[in-house]
Image (cartoon, rainbow, N blue to C red; front, top):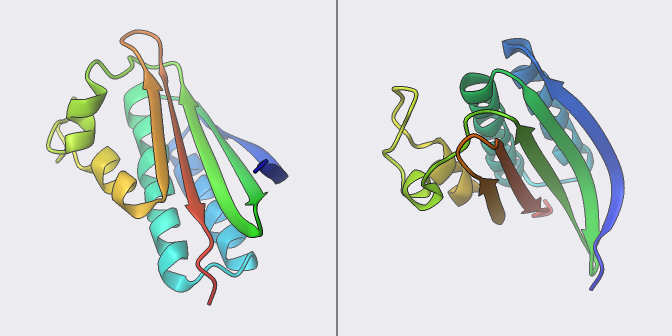
Length: 139
């Protein structure tokens, strides 16, 4: 089944305020599309965490927010891109409790639990691309 992109917005992540702007955009889109409150909160929380990761670890990057449709269902896909230091051990980072920034190290593992799909492409010195997808759970 082909995935259709219904809307697409590229947003820069160049300062801490951009974390809030990306978060608000995703929250508003989820609410407009009728996501239930839990799905909206889950997607918004994951978006906030991953946007903050770009800001903290890379200093700048981009979020691409897409509304998609596939087989009669709708979803929101967000891709976070940066040219930062990359992730040396993705599996370790996804297990949780591992941090290079002195945090609890729960951002990636927590985000993975909140969305329907999370994919990471990264290598040391080559940046990181994290893609998340949440399908609508209608009210």
